[in-house]
Image (cartoon, rainbow over all chains, first blue to last red; front, side, top):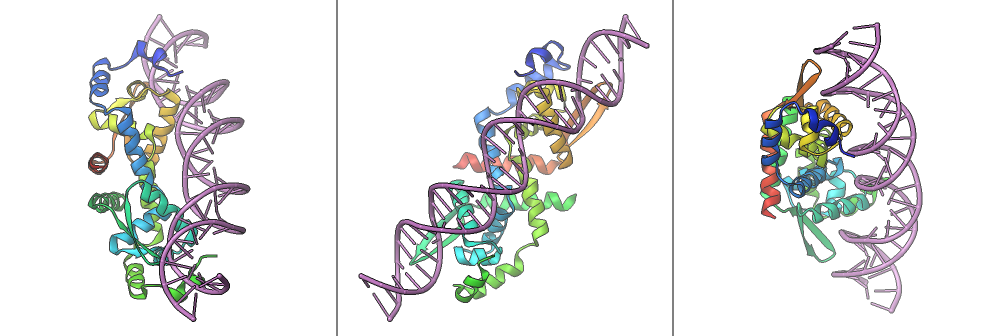
Length: 118
Length: 118
DNA sequence: TTGTTATATGAATGACTGTTCATATATTCA
DNA sequence: TGAATATATGAACAGTCATTCATATAACAA
């Protein structure tokens, strides 16, 4: 299935491959990391996160700010909640969302720096 | 279509909404940012990036290190190339890939810190 | 209780994406 | 030139995902 069988015979750099294999984090961790970034990989969610960088907001406000339907926002907030990127508090009928963590701001900043440099 | 029509009548916080709307980056930038993060949002690509954090590698080495087929790796390298996350140099039949930019290491580090804290 | 409003959610749909398989290209070697 | 090897790529397929629509839930007000 994998081409290890084919390729292991003629690996170009045995030593480098082995060294990298040792240092590489395990699959579970890397898969979790991919899932974490995947959460940032959608325009609607990025807009929600960006908006929440500025201020706590309720669902209706959010849907207004980023110009998406209430349902779409609600679905994406669910995703963000499950990824533990946002937290929420309830006040009567209204639910207020905010960012869960300061790393998020840092990651967004790094991303912006990167794409601005290109 | 959007629920602005419904919701603008009874926005809970007019002032906050307007302030956030002003500060929020434009759609194009946020969309680019989402695309940037989307590139990190796949296990195969994260593995490739992680491997390249350690050392420059050719396609065959990469496919060995992360245990994926040569074709799958090649396809994902194309994606990473288009996102300008990796660069490559050719030496005979062999193509060596490496990370394009130091921001990438920083972003990976931040991501790891985040998921490790949860 | 009844009506209204804010939010959540399930189902359906269309679009997107990653892998595989087969094949093409390019380079080296005999 | 012909064979072998490293990499790239197009097509097809399967799985994933974001949105919409309809509806449910929950809280408040009359």
